[in-house]
Image 1 (cartoon, one colour):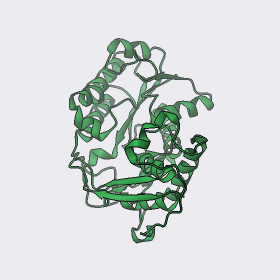
Image 2 (cartoon, one colour):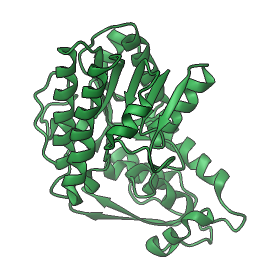
Image 3 (cartoon, one colour):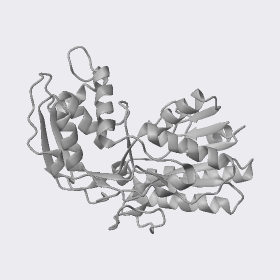
Image 4 (tube, one colour):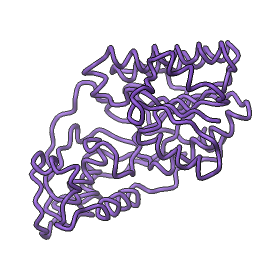
Length: 333
């Protein structure tokens, strides 16, 4: 039995569905699904660990901005709760542990693509919490646990993702028209589809359940795209009127990241398979399939119309700036 904490999030719900389709018994744990399943509650955690042989720990304050707004909640959830989880595991049956970390642990790195052995120098609250989490997981190995770390970059590809997460925000404007606000147009992202990430996690689950202690592993595509280029790519794929507005980056944003995927390839046989252009086209197609008959977003997101100035009238759009003017940066691995 595998316990998946954060099972109601973008990655968690896709991972649980995949594992169950594969016949693997899983136990979900997420306050979005059950308000009592609080990762900070030792009683709830102890109950959830009963009969568990492995844990995929995804539960976290996972948004950089949210962590900046409430650093105490971030520390309680991402650090203190993780330490409590490890302590409970060590005192019990010592299930294996796979910990979800982030590209944010590196901070701003000048040399790309980034290798997993680059020193960790986080620049924001969320990155610091994940770096501390990694230290807890590595220390758990010294206490007899099989524990591994994977580092995600920017995961996308699901229509139920947060509407303000960058890929989804741009895709929604591309689908229904309006303005894409590009915060830090030169910031470089390594975007990886949810399907590719779930594949990588499953390979890590297999390795970890076999008792392999691995070095930290990226689940990243190895390709970079600037935020400006991403906006232009989605505007190019749109049939609506789309404007692109640039604003300065936030003080806590990492300026650029492309992850070196070689270690994941060597240790797990994993590579991201979905090119960015196809991934974004697939996301737009999924959004279209959920649109209401009037041609706009689903009713549950109707407030987004007022916030972005979306128009439902379909118009021909001419893209002023070519995507080719902003190159995709590709890993040399």
